[in-house]
Length: 127
Image (cartoon, rainbow, N blue to C red):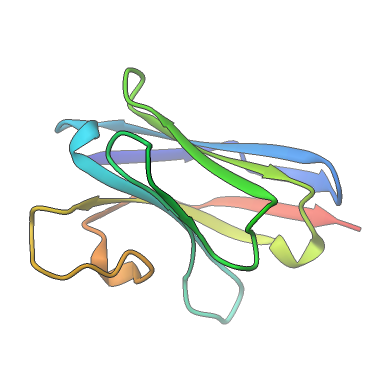
């Protein structure tokens, strides 16, 4: 699976931004999809994850109620809708694909759980 993230940029606090991650290769609907972010000098951290068909989602407490993850399997794309971003959300955002059948562990919050990664897309939130 190849992942291509896009949609990052400069946004004012309180506005909205939508990130997209387009997948190519093996069947997209077989993967859980996640979004992570990374701040300078910090480790990559979990933002959100969505199940195969989109019926299950989980969010980091820091973004709950502000960000929404959703997917369109017909378009092989997962999205992260960022509403009311804050300056503290500034960072590089990465999408990732998890083949849940590839192993026995179940830790969707851990980067090590994911099999494929896209390149980061930078989000900068100005105050």
